[in-house]
Amino acid sequence: MAATHSSGYIGIDVGKTWLDVASFGDANVWRVKNNAEGIQTILSRLSQGVVELVVIEASGGYERGMVSGLQLANVPVAVANPTRVRALAKATGKLAKTDRIDARLIAEYACRIQPAVQEPREEQEERLRALITRREQLVEMRAAEQNRLDTSHPSTLDVLREHIAWLSEQINGCAAQINALVDLMADWRELADLLESIPGVGRVTAVTVLADLPELGQLNRQKVAALAGLAPFNRDSGQMHGKRRIFGGRKGVRRVLYMACLSGIRCNPVLKEFFERLTKKGKLFKVAITACMRKLLTIMNAMVHQRLAWQAFGPLLP
Image (cartoon, rainbow, N blue to C red; front, side, top):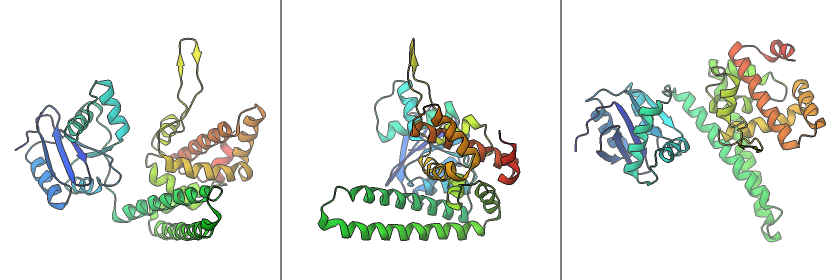
């Protein structure tokens, strides 16, 4: 069945096998296979009308082929966080969930929210992001195995330790590949060197923040903190004042910032003084270290915006 794209706002629900496509204002939803032939079918149909924006829900990597195809065809495309799309569904009372419903909902999200268009990425940048993602996966697996050491039967400890050692080798291998690739990319190398000049920040931390937070240096500190999931949200109602909590955001950024701050509160004079001041006020370690992570991200954001290394930027801080 032919699709009519009267609104120009298209939503695509991505699965491992299928792509469901809807246009805002059109009840029809059509489906193709999530492969090269299916992607080409979508591109061909979209070329028959005016497309204002295509929004695709992030699906753990299954969306990459479709996103790349749209970018190569110069079609404006944005990748949406599934949580935000479901928030729109709840706000509008659309609680049912099927692939067809999701496609129409994503199209509505495209029209009403109009998220920022994702810029095309070069092949080297795609490879770099893939390595960073893989390293993050390996770190999570190693942490899970390390947590099992205390509760596992003695007969399995040797196998666990061998696996942890192997995972550590793989993590180091990914880090080496990341470093080598960044050295070949002038723009990334320049920004990574800026961030790495901060005491406590290493190359992997710098590159991970740049990869997972491409908005760094382009937004104000409140918005950048919110994207990383480091902005505390109020939980107040009437006379009740709940604890401020952080949630959501990009966990890869938070993980490397946490490790950087553990080092920074010992060797970075700005973070060390800030952390000590908070703990003297009675703040719990978790609260104080989270505040340090937010401060470190704010510093990174300003340094990238001003293109200043720590040696020039650090003395300007209070």
